[in-house]
Image (cartoon, rainbow, N blue to C red):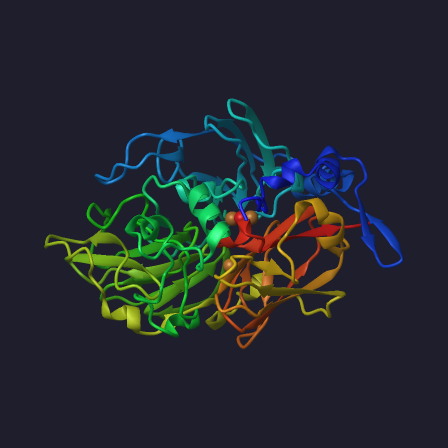
Length: 512
Ligand code: C2O
Ligand code: CU
């Protein structure tokens, strides 16, 4: 079992198809009755679409990023980890919709890396998927990313190599809307994370791959510490509908903006102030239930795109999802902002300090957590971003399956094999309306993320929200439509980083 190498890193090692895709010569994809030519990252179509996207005098934002080991732990912990710019999260990047982001990324890590700009409808050759859209950035090397950022919203970025995300390599990316009405007084970005505190996620992954649940040495405390399964001990069956087993990895702590509950991130505000909270779930394995103690809030956006405003007490946020909410501070004390891993008793904590008063206990559990818990299924797209109705030209089925026992997570029956991209990728053509149909046959939920596009979730609340990451519950089927307007080869995978690495990934390939 140790020979399992179904990692995204393998993209690079799989010579034929992937080298060809990144190298620009014609990649032939097989299909019924012959072969089709892939529109890869170096295709002239990719450059043409980028040119159309970029305004004549688009402003340029330049940033320099370095991914490097970070030797000091957080909040008194002692882990060694990896981070952007020696901080977890890395420094926020903020620019206006329509601008060009020019990011020079230096790899100061002992391993190859890349940067993926999660949720951005960017040019395919800047998407950061090693071996598919670019070569890996070797240790000591740099890579220059440059792309137009078309849509306003709350995004983030992270590596697309192995389980590097779970070390702390992530940072928020906020794209401002020049026409934003700005019906709030203060804006706060809250990045949520499940925190390994220095443990090696690649070792956790290989343990999961080698043994799955059956291979765990349950008698050994240390085994449980680094990759103990959530055995249901802290699970509330059916909570949030995500199933008994919501995560695969045992974490040391849960963070908001890199801070543990014992040293919480704190927002200074005053009573009556309207706060826009941009919430990013950058966790690798855990969904969070988010609430503001003693307050309701209004959801205004998900995955960057506006929704019809909807009030709730709590919000379920899968890995890779983002939500913007507006909350009016109705206290002149200290208000807990909590993000509890689904099924657990407590988790991450931040504070809104609107006056004097004692901080709540670190494990505070506001009643709102059990109030009206909103999910994407409750939301409707704002009219301005709802896709015009159109019959799909193409249906793509994604059957999600797998078990903890053998830790083999699959889409359409097989764990993803980059070397077999020619057969396994799903094909589509530019200009089509495409319908994705996610059928979850497994007992775990999967937050499914599509690169380079923002689909519209179909369902009970039509027109459903525009999203790039959608939770598919155990046994559930979710349909989502998008316009095939961004040619290239696009990863589509579960945003549980361990599931993706164990095979729950595929590629949507534009063909001509
Ligand atoms: Cu945020 Cu392919 O991922
Ligand atoms: Cu998954």
